[in-house]
Image 1 (cartoon, helix red, strand yellow):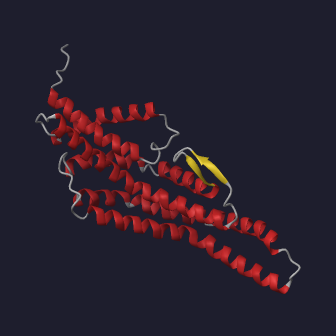
Image 2: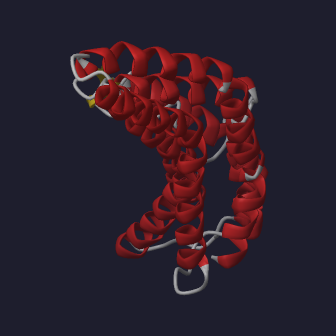
Length: 258
């Protein structure tokens, strides 16, 4: 049996495919953290690239590039992959930001834990909501959507055609604004009750001056927050599921604008 012949154009085409796939996989929330060893991420990227390359080889350029031209082309592919991952990251950033606000308001401002994903100290509630969003992300098979987006991106946006001067940047800004609104929606139920609790405690401090409202507020705010979080966990999952379901349309919109 004869071994296949690898030409220079095939190797360059695989490198182009590897750059786009690597950037997309590295931007997936499950794989972009420090809890995944770099060797494992590299192996996954190489394996996915080997599987995807035969399906997209017709969309890859066949000519041989010089090193500077190839470097520019690879940089464009990496930028495209990171933009796709950024759309998904915004959802997790909204969930974690809402958790930070909740933790601060309920009295957990100093209760920080080490987040292996971001390699920094984060609020306890922020870590909880971030992990919950990741589990929901995997349970809904949203990570499979990235594999579909890889093949679709080569069909809709062949290598070398990236153009950031169109409407892609305004579209990303609109999605970022929407993620801020999402974080407000996630935090509103708990924040509303915490404000009402503080109002009631303020009235009680006026009626009963001898009451130590400051010490009483901590267990009440924590208990109310956990109770509301448990009751609204289904709403939290529903909002995140809706955002995950919109990712496919956002990917297609991004490819059309680029």
